[in-house]
Length: 76
Image (tube, rainbow, N blue to C red; front, top):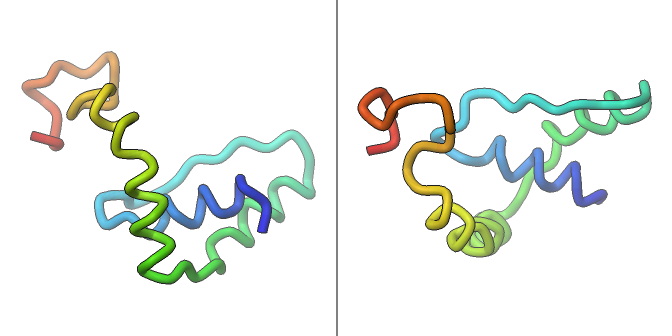
């Protein structure tokens, strides 16, 4: 599977994610992005990908919206 598709599929497997926005430059990319919703990742793969992002999440902090005050963040 293309890395972009797996990334979108991983995001869709996250319990806190209710939707994913993905850009596209061509109709084929739109179709590829849509097919990512059909990818079923095993719990092991989801866990491995989640572990790979831990350092990035730690650096970004609990509020990923740079413009939203921490007091309004749901990620406390």
